[in-house]
Length: 538
Image 1 (tube, rainbow, N blue to C red):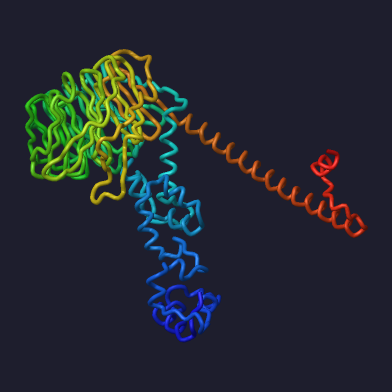
Image 2 (image 1 turned 90 degrees about the horizontal axis):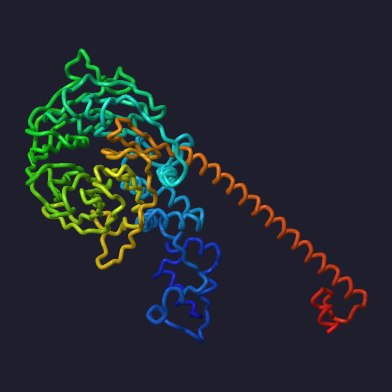
């Protein structure tokens, strides 16, 4: 498009073309090429801007997302999920760097698995530390090994049925207890017994732990607790210590304690006295009493809410005010024995006396919550006594002596566009519910408790033994297969590159031969190839 000379000066002033918009154009001369001076076809800049869009006014200036400021590109990348981020990172080196350093990897990792046991760096740059993207990719890779080979370790030590197991993966410890009233601590790696408590005088139906505190609940209505001791390599001194501050006992429940849970500030306990009690970890005082209409079987806290099962119903409470947010009436036919919750707190998984497993989505946590049923599985022929969830695997233990592994990845519809909520539900969506991806069986009846870690499953039952399914063998096999695939791909690309170079050299020789023939008087204008020869013969 042509402009007169005065108009070109006006364009540069109004648009700051050379100074602000594209500083490269000043050196490359794009502006002088576009703004050609011709008095015969004078057009005002105002009319031009109204009639033509920017990409037609400046046809020789291609635009890309990489021309935007890095901060703005990062904000755009925040709306992508990990799979989309991985695709975008393959487009260019700039997008690869921005996508790899994006804090979305940390958010998604914490949403799925919580904070890692070893703190990750805030960014990349240190060779001996892993970025959040590398941690995410590694954990996602490990989660796929539950469909591979495994080995079983059997831990002997309990004299009666094992009612509860708890896997503390960050410390590589396993805690178990049951009818023999003894809490035992095991090494997760080699399966050896580390320590055991004195007999507590009653059946222990619940155990919970973190790296600072261990609690066990008995049928006599007490909570036995142990604080971590720095001098002890296995965290807890179960046999007793001279320091009275390392061990305590809480008495306020009027019935057997069936479930326990911990967070950073509180202890949660559920009992057959039809209450859930919330305790302060530092003062050991009861802060709230949440009353139900039937025996409490299980509970699962998250942030300022706690979900609990009582009879056949499921309750969701606000622990700060003690108000009831919502109730799922008659979630199962019979009692709702087990409960699990995602790390985001938006999804609940329940198992009941009818052998079914339900998945619910919670929308809204303040003042009022709405609950929708997402999926249902019936993998067992008996009651589901225990559930455990570690993204994306939901595992259940039943009285029929079987464990079921269910991949719920496709049912977790994450959306980063929602404000203050990381999971969005689209109504009237036909969720395709797949059957359990794997069933583990061949044990005695009545599996009472199960827990899951990054590459292990721990279960206890009526046999009085603890079984550990170790999937690290599948991880090693998959790593070797991945290395072999990488080598094959590199060899394939190397052969393809050599083939291209050979073909290019052959075409050069043919062209030089044709040139020689034309110089020596070959005027037939026939290309001497197989195709040309066949045409001449025809």
